[in-house]
Length: 402
Image 1 (tube, one colour):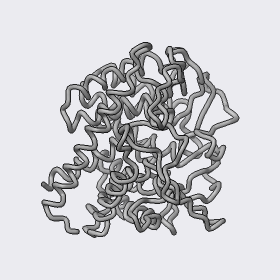
Image 2 (tube, rainbow, N blue to C red):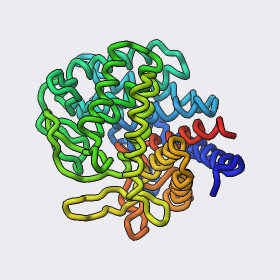
Image 3 (cartoon, one colour):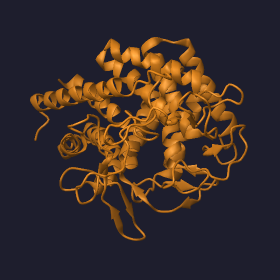
């Protein structure tokens, strides 16, 4: 494999086609013609559940996906669905009384789980900021800025820096801070900090505020001082409020995702010294993530060092992030082995993760290669985010080289 133009054109052409197929699935299968917006759940056999609750993360990611895709497709159908998603999200998920967004709502749009998970607010900022890029919508910008200020008011730790995980609807302390059952119940997590960073980075592109820039720098510092392990290059996942480490699980997908998102943040705020330093860190993180690449090109899910146990499932989102992160690593190092890893991630995905019958992507494959069963095609966590973003990012990075 070489980085010749013919190869890059082929890679570009395949992900461009995949992007359109992913969004066709969402346009054809998920529109809620009764309650508006998008259906909250479709199972692995493509059965729809119109009465299922609707999640803030799902709906923010739908808004982000159609908005981001439109930047490279100029497809009016993508713009149309982005507008539907924005109107539905801001009408139903924004808490007008206490600020922030509800975690879930009923199918008819009424608040269900009203906790304030900072992760969800971050995705709302990310989505609304992307929508500003394609519409210049003042409403979208104002929503994003207001949510940013809400996070800063309630979640930012003025003593230790960083962001606290979750609160009650009216911003009181919450006993269970977890995003999902698999997470540790800790006050600070890598995952939320990573997505606050990407949200703030995108917001800065449409609202270059100096305080926002300062907080992006603070977030990058949180990663360099606390979250990225200086010795291994892997990310630490859980912390208490004073940044004491909890657990030692390694998440290969988050490693490779952070490698490119950290650099993007430094580049967007245009801090040359920071960019130079983060490039070195990004290279180290991506090299660490590559430890989880299997012989078939897929990237494993996690590793538990204490037990010396690999979780060799291959989740769809992990493969998507590998496509982007290893491509970014090739751009930084000119090492064609990383271009090959990006391509192999895509080939593994197109062969084993893409659902050839119903469309979209399976949740993933087990370590023995079988499809992970009992997982939704659309749900609280199954969204057109990582896969859409992988296609968009690969297209953006390859297009100038063609």
